[in-house]
Image (cartoon, rainbow, N blue to C red; front, side):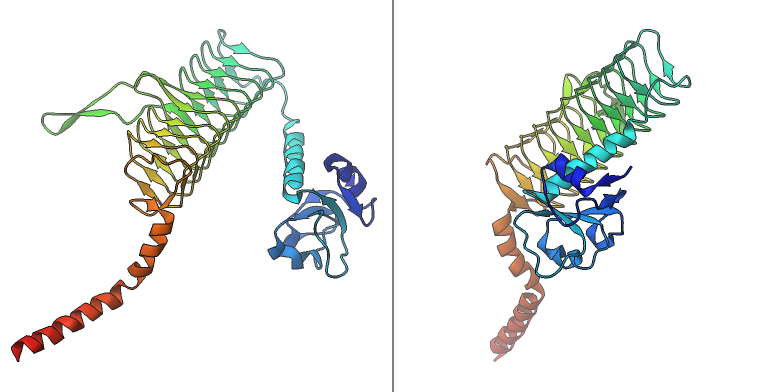
Length: 346
């Protein structure tokens, strides 16, 4: 598809500096810009690329003042990053508009209910009593189990497995390889070093506008529900255990794991590889640095922690100064012990 700078500016309420007829055929990063591409500049670290990029059109903040001549046509907006994100979403949606209809190679059980304007790709499976809302797109080889409820305008990408009785809200995006509703990790120790499996009879509930990254797993509850509240964003390879509740608009980065029955507050932010013990509570607005290990409840709202076991980030940074000095401190102690031994011998 081809668009002019003038057309793009009209979509994002921007001011054109340069040629309004400059044509755009694709998108690019500013450091990799080629003729016919659209890029953006928001971080001042990348300012120097603006003067050398071959991109035809670049979106910039309206506060930006160039230090020298810019070859590309600029479109000034209040927030260049947000404007470019808006265009990326429109581009993605345009690609998905090609996905329409229900494939004859999909399996849909006769008791399933399918909404209007739904796409179901090849080899997708829709089980008994499943409900698929309006405007959903279910990509090839997805599995929608018995009695699963899917809201309106959801995207279920290839290889997703949503197992029986789970409920997915409106406008949810589930990326490739996600498993929702597998058994929680429940085993009771028995005599003879054996374990008795505990049946997991609950489900998983995702509220509206949740996004789940590729190969993430969300386990069903032992009883009741594992709940992911509205607006939560989970990165790839996240593990959510049985009966966990994640509060609204919380974001969790890749390879993090939350053990069973833990309650996470709303508006939290967790970095990559965060590990959280089971049966604890995390207050609203808590931020955890990457690789933090949380062993007990965090009751203070908006607290920021790091380390394993985690504690207040300011204290952690102060402690780390001494941690880096430990080899020298150990050598000093060793030297002092030798001197003390000599003094005692005299």
